[in-house]
Image (cartoon, rainbow, N blue to C red; front, side):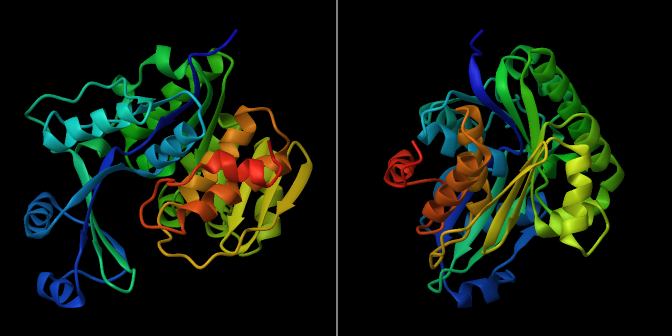
Length: 330
């Protein structure tokens, strides 16, 4: 029986607001260069007001992955939370225009504003990100429609949302609905600090609820509290049927039920490294969803990641499927 969606994602619905600026402006506004900082509502309003010639794009890690999958022609939906304000309506409409269903209606007034990340790009290509988490961090089980999560071949979760109990409940509800419908659920670990804060819960999730998990070497080593990657991956393999480990610039390691593949990464000079992990996930999930072998799926991930770092922005600009064809993968 065909499912309505090939991939359904759950994550933070964040509008990326970009502005070109210079070091003088960063100093003047007290913005720390080249890093991502979480900020409060008042600071967010000040920075947003100070931005010149803003360009806006729907963002958030899993939403970027879904945009990549849409670019590859898969049917996708995104479960996220926005407010019924200008940025929230922009977010919902943008996703629909990209071909990703956004089943959650914007929440009426009386709630926090739509989440946004103010990104200041200096002439040297450095991005200084100031993220206000807003309403998206309040995603809870009530936002998860079982008929959406249950009608997915693959469900993809964002580790960042694990910071709140409501987010954890939303994950479990979605994963169980997906499994009940015969689909597979997986997660991107997102951030080693996030893993540190919720290690026991993450371990339980990986062991009991997830069919595939994507992380980088720091996240896997944090999850299993070891500085030996081989030990961490051996433990992961014992607990989860598909394990993917990216190692910035080194071969990607993929393990499925004992089968192991290593895929070299394409070395390109990054113009803007944002979104590399998100697009790796898109290429990899495309491979899984279309029934390809592990090595090919990993190869697709590395091609999608190298496309996105060759230009500004966290979403593909070129025809990634044509790149797969060029490499003889499809």
